[in-house]
Length: 340
Image (tube, rainbow, N blue to C red):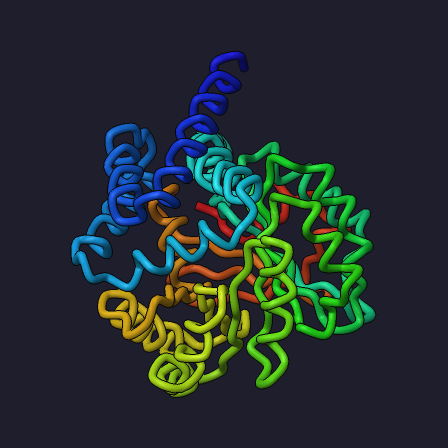
């Protein structure tokens, strides 16, 4: 326990110094922190991520330098530090080790991130989420994606984020939920990354609000077909996004999307990521989360709770089970979803 605390203190010091260097000399600072991370990486997920990052930054003219500089310049330092450590250290290092050990012991897969759809008559309550995160942390799950529908009050979940500062939360929200009050409340939580839905003519104002508070944020685009993604990556959306401080575009498919669509989108996203036309990082939620899970576990699993059902995603496709995390312990649910 003492060694973990010491490691975290050292990481915080290195991150603080590196952020200062990026602000003063972006290219040199970015390369230095990537090189340092490559030397210090102790987990498979860290090494794979840093290898990919070095490849993307191998070109001096890479737009990713502008992207990183922009994020560092416009985001609260406290948020960059806490969210980055929660994701990179708590989840991809400590959590990954716990996941691998537990998977061997219990003979079922454990996803590194859990997704939950909130809102509507069947939506989970704040109490349900407390229980979910408490159970997940004991297994090594330190990342949670919460998708808020329009009738869900963001304020009701703020206590959750404060109670679990060692967890990284990805909030997917519609711009209409981001009023002055909720934006100010979000700004008090450094372990959040907000993804604003790409609603025409509405998301830029929401992105500006979040930027004014130094909140880490991005854009997300739901899709049902690969041609929608192709059009978005080649069209005005990326150009418009490049003008704002949200530099990540996350593409999200329905939880039961067919494999053919997932495969086509994965190809499109990787192609754009290798040769970006703007300082935009394209991310496909399904394939990229599965890729991280494969690094951690040697297998792929992705979990989403929605409408009283459980969506279990692997490389073979999606199974939909009539199981609800509110009535079944998470360890038993995972054993049903991802047996080995």
